[in-house]
Amino acid sequence: MYKSFLIKYAEIGVKGKNRYLFEDKLCDQIRYALTRCEGTFEVVKSQGRIYVNALSEFDFEETVENLKTVFGVTGICPVVHVEDEGFEKLCQDVIDYMDRVYPDKHITFKVEARRARKNYPKNSMEINCDIGEALLNAFPEIQVDVHKPDVLLRIEIREKIYIYSIVIPGPGGLPVGTNGKGMLLLSGGIDSPVAGYMISKRGVKLDAVYFNAPPYTSDRAKQKVIDLAKTVSRYSGPIRLHVINFTDIQLYIYEKCPHDELTIIMRRYMMRIAEELAKESGCLGLITGESIGQVASQTMQSLMATNDVCTIPVYRPLIGFDKQEIVEISEKIDTYETSILPYEDCCTIFVAKHPVTKPNLNVIRIHEKNLDERIEELVKTALETDEVIEISYR
Ligand code: ATP
Ligand code: MG
Image 1 (cartoon, rainbow, N blue to C red):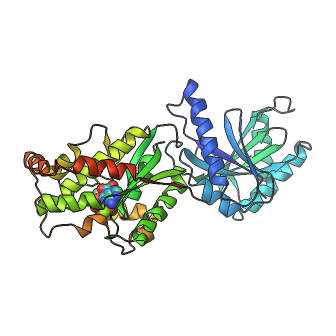
Image 2: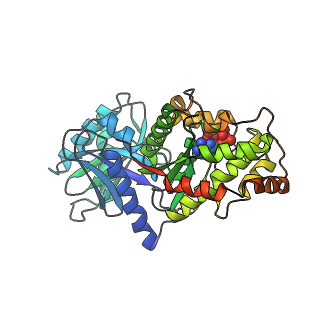
């Protein structure tokens, strides 16, 4: 029944040159999402609108599900095409459409016609009135409401005539690629994939880094992170994942620093290395899944101690969220089931029984001096042995 989709997007703040950038990126992301669907499609910009036209048979549900992953899309309208074979035929087509889409006629409606082709014999007002009348005659229960109709029935006069009324909500946000790139610190937990999703929703492309600690962490733990990155890339587009071997750095910190400060010092080295990678790859900030007070390493004091080593912005989109709120998003974006798989995490292995909850920044800095002898070389080696994995969702 449906031959195309009209893609709605919020245009607020999108003017002039930015509008083209916005629309082009949106089209790119729509095409990326459609590569996962059966069938061939074209994505076209036409008179200030974006259409996805099906050029073959396609699976409606699958296509809609994938269009729902594209940030920037606020609504997906399935469109029926009919040939222009005179006004009477159009009235009949619209009656058929309403009959199929709204079996229950106890509804109010309003017709809103738009002529993309000005040589049509009736103007928009006339089309509205005459089609409205035809519907009232065809269905005794139906009523007109021009202010708050249940059904806003759109008729677009183009080469063919487009009929649509259903708006399936999209995810909103901004198209990925309209807002630079960020480096996501991606662990195997619940929070960081959600953090990546949220920043990506603001139009930011993602790179990611995972700190791996073999043999203390297994290949399964690494695979879990790859799987999480894959799921996030369904929304964010392809992700370049850096896997950093963090074992020697962790062992060295374990050897040289007080154990109750291990987590903080370790996190400071994660941030330093992530920042190095970010700078090399043109990322404009770091992204983490931290939330105030969630664990000892996320108190205000701990966050301050971690943040101390960063010179580029650190985005923490979950900072004010409760765990339950984060879990809800992770369920919605389908990362939850993977996140809760019980594989070891590099942080839990070396973690102290009683980590400091209120680290003193000066004390941390002093204790970090114990690492002076070898840490630079270890960081250098970690960066040189960086394994890069290109992740995309297929
Ligand atoms: P998550 O559920 O995201 O793992 P968490 O509640 O377990 O978070 P922490 O382990 O303190 O919290 O980690 C805080 C943040 O630091 C994470 O959200 C993530 O961004 C980053 N992080 C932690 N461990 C790693 C790791 N091994 N590799 C990459 N980033 C990490
Ligand atoms: Mg974690």
